[in-house]
Every structure is written in C-alpha cells, then in structure tokens.
Image (tube, rainbow, N blue to C red; front, side, top):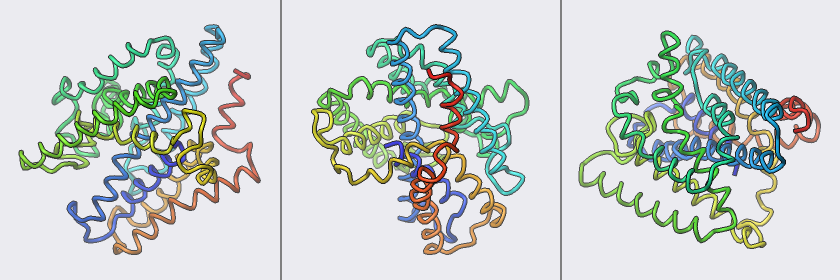
Length: 350
C-alpha cells in the first residue's frame, strides 16, 4: 500500500505540472486524474500514520525512556522538515513551480504526526476514534478560517510567522486540522487489522455516506468533486464529505488488497505485487526525488500546457512507472544510499 500511495502521488503531481492542452474540468481524462489525486494524499498520509503508530507502539511496549523517545522523534522531524524545504526549492514558484521555499506541506504534516505518535500510542482505540470524529467534523467548525477564498499561491505563501502557522495548522495545503484525520485513521486501521469484519462495517457506512454525497450533488445542482471551488467534495480546503469519501476509499483499497491475510491466508493478489516492495521501502526518497524531475519540467514548460492529451498522458504514466525499476535497481546497487537509510542510521538502534 505504501508503494501504491507514493506512485499515486507521483502520478498526480506529474499530471499537475504537465497538463495537456484543451482538457477542461469536465473531461473524462481530467476526472480520472482527479480521482487518483483525491486518493493519493489521503492514502499516503494514512499509511504513514499507520507506520509511525506501529513504530511508536513497539517502543511504548519496550518501555522506551524519555531520552530514547527524543532520539527517535527529533531525527525524524528534522529529516521531514528538511525534505519539505528541499521539495519546495525543487518546485519553487520562481522557476515555474508551485511552492514558496517555506511552504508547509504533507511532510510537515507528517513531522507533526511524528511528534504526536508517542501520545497516540498511549491512547485507547475509543479515544482515538473520538478524535477521528472531531477531525472529520472540524471543517464545519473552521468555516471561513479554513481559507475558502484562498487561491493556490495564497495558500502556499505566508507573510510572517503567524500566517505561516495558520498555513501549517488550518489553511495551508495539508494543514494539521483536518488532515490529522488520516493519521488517526491509520492508527485505527492498525488496531483493527485482525478484525476485518469491523473494518467492513465501517466501509459499508462510508459507502452509504458516499452515496448520500452523490444525491446531495444531484439535488443541489453542485459539482460532486472539485480540487477547489463550489462542490460537495473539495480538496483545498478539505471538506467534511471529502474526508469521509476519501477515507472510505482508502480503507476499502486496503481491505481489498489484504484478502484473507488477517486470518493467516494470502493477500488478495498473492505475491504478484511483490515487485513494488522496493518502492514502498524507498517512499520518502522517491517522493523527494520525483520533484527534482518535475522542477526541470516546470522550468521547461514555464507553467503553460504545451503537450496534447496523448503525449501528456504518456509522459505522466512513464514518469510514474519508471520509479519501479529505479527502486529495484537502487536496492541492488546502492541500498545504503537513501533518506530512509539516513534516518535509520541516526536513531541509535532504537
């Protein structure tokens, strides 16, 4: 799942930087790209939350001391924040990109999740479920504070420290509120990994809620899903229906791929996806590296669509899939040269 999440992220970022000419929001190709985009970040954050929670639970069960928690958290936070700055510089607005150098993003969100993981590892399932519901409802509570009227370059910019913290916490691209919803979702899926029937009940409820959002769209005459604007589901800012629908799709995908593994059986596809495992193990390295390629593309295209649909589609798919053989070759030739290896070597064996 981690491999699929990072590949979806590569796909949607590539499609955003290399959009085809003449494709409107209502075009089927745009709908397919938006569907992948709507799944990519929620899946990436959910799987990351799952992994951090699993690591924190293990350390908690081992009786990790306060200094050891610091040695585990601080390198992770520093690496994630540094990588966020690198990503911002690689795809900087001054070179046709999308970010200011100081823009908070998905990696700063994960840094906050790392800081909170020792606390989450001590909380009961019911407490985290209650927090999940609060995070889900938070878009309603935030209202205009979520930045309903902010354009993209307002959302990635900040004038002063106070505004930067606003972007980090409530109205940036991936603000802590409400995006901690997916981190909490990851912790709950982890705890229910041996209870597929409980997850299936949640999926059914989520699918019913998804159907309700479609009816609302038809009755109200609104677009069902848009990246931003007037729609039932919006990504910027993340609306409550978006959280419910995307969270449902993430858990559904995880359940389908799991197969009978929870009962001691085989995953749904057996070992047929094992070739993706190197991608999953190098997810952070690939996430950062693909922005170097996209930064060059942004400079060449100067922010304007210059390819027709077929070439743009081919380039997007090729750039997504090329990371699979690159990850396999990396593990064979230079396995110790990655961001993940750097993180492991910084954490004193714990």
